[in-house]
Amino acid sequence: MKIVIVLVVLAGVPKIFETVMLRKQRMAAMKDIEDQVRAINLALPQKVDRFTTLTKVDLGKDLYRVSYTMSPDAPIEAANKDVYQAIAVKQVCNTTYKKMIDNKISVEYVYTYTKLSGGDAEMIIRVPPGSCS
Image (cartoon, rainbow, N blue to C red; front, side, top):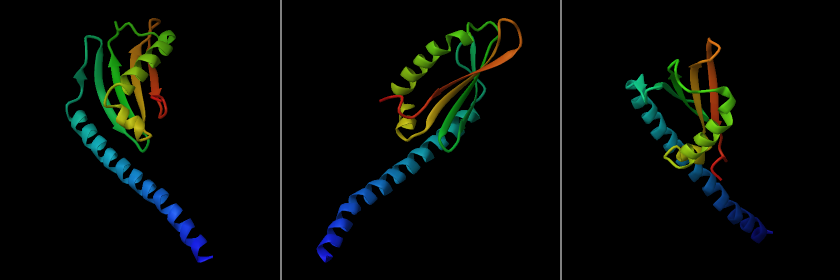
């Protein structure tokens, strides 16, 4: 009986160790990301290109949000959202943003733009964990 209990405990130790280590890695990653968010926001708004202005970056528990305002003449259309989604997944998975996905943090892009028919609209592109697999 004692041998069985010892074997069960020994079998569980690596899993507990793995869980604790993953939690510590996630906490360290979150701290790094929080520092980056603070530094980025201090420099905003910032023009990215002739159409795009980076206006805000937020970090929630499981979400990293990047907000942009598009100029009225920006060639952005809601009908092309699938194309924008594919581009966002490539961008996230092939850059340092992948660190967020690996830590189970979704990356979300929010674009505020002027519709062709007039009025403002918002397009949200989200890259959830598991998108880079």
